[in-house]
Image (tube, rainbow, N blue to C red):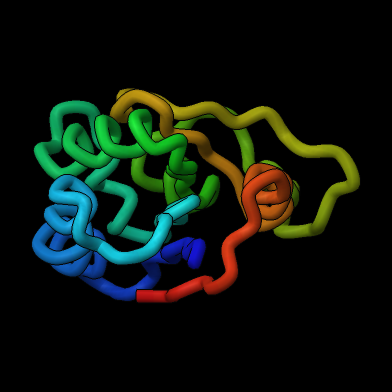
Length: 133
């Protein structure tokens, strides 16, 4: 089975990912193929360059071909991205063409985007389940 994780609740990345999921992925005992992870709010901070969880996760993601993406608005607000929101303008109105946004000082392999970007990135390796933590 293929799964994707969405880290939306407080401490879900620092605790649930860092203390449970990541150690299992490293040991090869997680039991499913993780095809992607999407990070919201303060959960994006584990993807900072030099963060122990993020550095370990980047290594596993590179080995397994796993998508690591963080919410553009969350990353912009926290200084982990530069540019503008991808799919809405500064006034909060939707746009037909994506804005330019790129990661800043994150671990290797991290992308920044919103749901349309997530769907596109996972299209070639769709999960059977999406789990929100």
